[in-house]
Length: 525
Image (cartoon, rainbow, N blue to C red; front, top):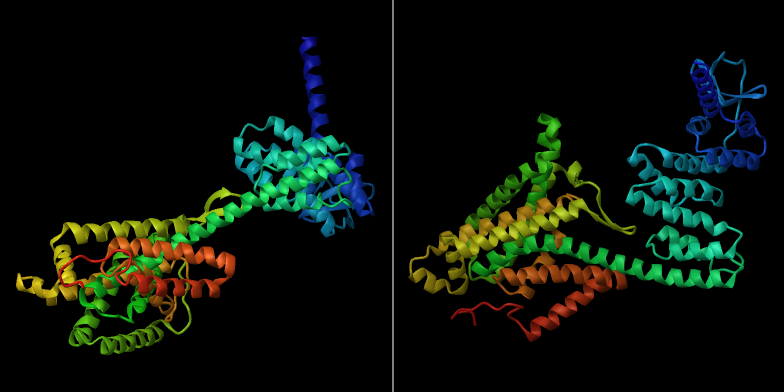
């Protein structure tokens, strides 16, 4: 019995010792000199004690005060001894502990380091990510202990980098050299900035470490350049997806009727405003399901744009077939009418169309390469629409009639194809696909009355480059132009890129006027 009582008392003493911080260390947090405060913060951080988190957080929240020789935490009408955590009487006229910007920066780093020992993996991951830009040499022992205890692979990678950064300030050149070699394996722009300082003799006296830092920078720069090019390619894919959705409808209408529809960009606008309208409806009547306004807007965008297309074809375009210049001028006038109508209904200013929560954020492939979910969804949506159009054009009776009219209108009419009805249906289909393109565009661009003007020329370039009426040509041309333009923009700027693309298309059309894929038929020549 005596043995058990002794063990219990020993455990209680140990627990009590663990629960209390060193009062002298805590008292140094109230020192006049900022350097003394920084040293006290570093010492408390090294303890990795949960009570240290409590004290440093109170200091960061301006809740730490000096009452006589004791540091206290004041929380409303309650007060606690900072070292022991025990409740005490509220002191009279406690002196506030000054926390300047330097101290706040140290506190942020210290709190992030202490959270590395949290039981929640999410908290540790967030802390390790934050520490990538807030590592000091004094954190090396603490980071080493956290690295030994960490079992999560993602967190361990970040801790390895943070630990290597902390070792860059070690007095031993061999330790610094090993740290530089470890950091050379990353692709982080933050690590690059850290290593850049070591290439100067004033910052790093050891030649071997300095030369290794130069080699590490070259390695990191190569990976950063690769990531930037991959980001441009992906951005080009998303742009190409928008162009594809805009050009698919144009390829159908231009291929079937030979109509140069200058109002096609405004059909994109109709689809984008359909997304805005559905978002407004969901916010007003179904606020709990507002994240699902976008799927509900898909049929609305398609049929709204298709209806506008049918009205355009029935009222104006039908009477101008075979008169190219008059059709061009008439559709340009229709585009102005649609723009003004949007201004009257929705206002002249851009409207806000927000991404659903499931399209927010992105996929991080590299530290400087994040693929946004909204662009990933747009690329997938464009491929899905392309698949549906291919099935419609190649596996249905309507598609067969459209292809027949595109290849030889007169012969198709002679064998019983209702060419006038096919014209209307094809125009409705092309307009509806353009509406889907506007729906996708609303997720990455401003929605306003003039938004379609910037895409009509690019859509026509896709159609002409790919080949009139050719889906495969539209796909290759849209994706190629999107990727090529983004790569050129990264190297030469947006203006030079646009000029270079126009020159390329002019030269290409002179050499191959039928486009990438030429139509086959007796009357195509």
